[in-house]
Image (tube, rainbow, N blue to C red):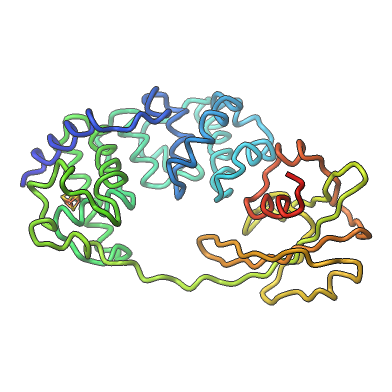
Length: 339
Ligand code: SF4
């Protein structure tokens, strides 16, 4: 197996098999590509598809995004999760306006100096938008490379990560079109060489794949050791006024759901008791919401005589829709039949 042969097979396959995703329609548009890269970090394509066009319609270029209120950006991001990325994209747009006169830079080093852009996103932008011979490695690419070479090392091992970047760099050097090669590796990992239900019979690399030859496709790469998720307890109170508006407050800027809006909530490492919520509060439901690092247990109360504090205000459904509200908060509003 030569790198040139791998590249030829992948690029030919990609030309006929790629999914027509909206950021590929004008693939070389740097702004659309930047937004899609931020959105796709840790979020499935199907979810990004719902949010991408409305986002770029509301913020059609770097200048408009940079000048927008953070609240408006978080509002348009609502439902995608990982809101830190929305804040980073916003900060990135502002840095591009300030330091690059509003023009997205093409070099990997300049890209990596921007907020929220790591080695992967810089490689994606440099190769797919600007056509540079820059590699990229994400989870999909790493899995494909490990199976192709039957490399069963642990993915979190720095040696394996270094190996994957070197392999990706070797392929990019041998490619006809660096952007197409990088995208084909990601596309293969997303649609054919998937973690489970691998479809080797559809794979353009089947004739060269070491894991397929060795019968180890199911065990390469090995499963990642799981970090134990921390538990967090939230007691959230639904308070409505006569017009049906709901009382909301804004979270602190740092940490989980930073700067997002929520109904008044007590948050602790141990479960707040019903008596702490005041005599008039009635428990109406409980649910568990999981994030990457936490298991959040919500108790939802309703209260008709809540003492409103500074920073809390009543919001209508339309106002709530335009703000950054997490999926957990949306669920609370659904419980109350507000949405
Ligand atoms: S042959 Fe199978 S295991 Fe090998 S790269 Fe293709 S899909 Fe992955």
